[in-house]
Image 1 (cartoon, helix red, strand yellow):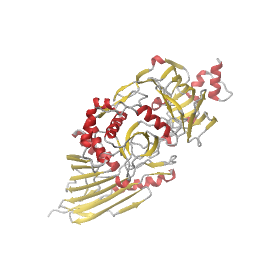
Image 2: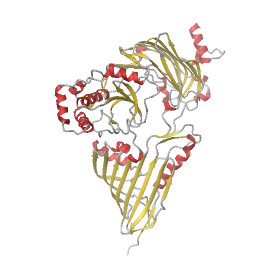
Image 3: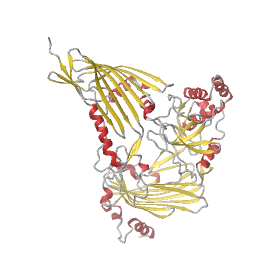
Image 4: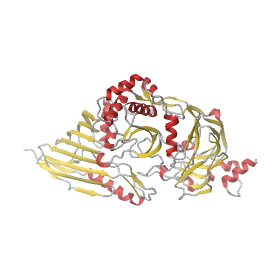
Length: 635
């Protein structure tokens, strides 16, 4: 047995017992508590980052993962990016069965080699090698040895002692060896509640970390799982040197080395945009004209080339080609605004439905998206330049309510994007419904949405009629035998108000019992999903965005029917939200159903989850409340 293997065995087991090779990789040697609620167990992960210079890093990794079920196959994490500035020096995998017997050896040449981005990208100079292995049975174990050389050092590998949901960690180690004169910054989060040992400022070990399980309404994984971030103060991005003492330095580097000189426009375009805006009375009017000009002239296509995919296309190329990615389109819009004298800033951000902020306390290469920021005197305006349909200044649902990095000639600055409060994220639903004595109904519904709820509804007008029909049948999936007979949409981009006018019919909506018809008067806006119940909730919970729903439905009954019993009005007021409904008899054949339901944005302790769930369950129960109609005897 070699000295290297003996050292490895000693580090892995941290005990005096010597295991045979088969025992080392056998699933039976995993502690039972680590297999509980886990799809995979990281048996051993030793990652070393050797910093030789600001533009030279060597990363070595030895990794053993036992996969317990099909859902754990992706937790092998045998995915390696390469391209300009990244060179794979060594890559090898061994596969073992449940008993630790070697089944297969896989060399680098046997890995799948593909473009690093999806088919929606026009072109990319980044590639990825990944292990494509189909197991014959579970559990099985993978031993991975890798050695990667980086000359592009803007992204320094970090550490996640717990790598994801349903993944346990038996042993994991992370070490930075700095043999250069370059300063290294690190930041650790959420280490205090886990079995993690700090050996020195750049060397950490973790042992026996049980898997984490997602829970309804829990905040993002990275906010409570342990994580270590690392960055160089001086770094290289594909041959361009950068400085990163703080966000101001980083933003200044971006402006001078990534953006400077990319905003030139053809003379014809300069004249055209000046002519379009010559009668504008203020900068906001000019910006609206420019934004519409970009929307009408360009379209989004991902282009991941240049300096690490971070340098935008030239504005002249975007103008000539009529397309660009988020960087190129934002830079093109910036150039047009600059030409007509409107101040704007390039902004790096995390885009996505879930809210995720740039870490303002740790400057580094972050973000996955670019937008524009207009520092308007009253309220700053954010522009999503990749959308051909967004109203001017509207960003709800993708880049709202999060910290972004603003890039200026003076340096970088962290600014929070627009928050859409619940009062401005409203949905108003009004309907008039005729209920017949056979239990069927015909109705006309109008839904008006604003704020975040606008983002949830707008876009359906662009779908094929079949998809529109399916959308409403899914939206009202609790109405059996629903038919959509007519649809009409109005998108008021100036007011950011989306209106849906729908005509519907349904057979057997009311249930018949003897000479009674039982009917739920809340026909068009019910809460049907109740959050999961937990005997022992382990995570705090979060309502990311608040909203208000207001509903008014006039229900007209057939002359052969009469109102027999109406449910009492209900009002529930909690810290999590508000709910009420009431029914007013307008005349012997009509009632007015009124309902208000709101949720309050906020972060709440896990001890309150049961009360929150009870509130939502009460809403769902009352939304199903029924009234009774009597079928009059025939004369």
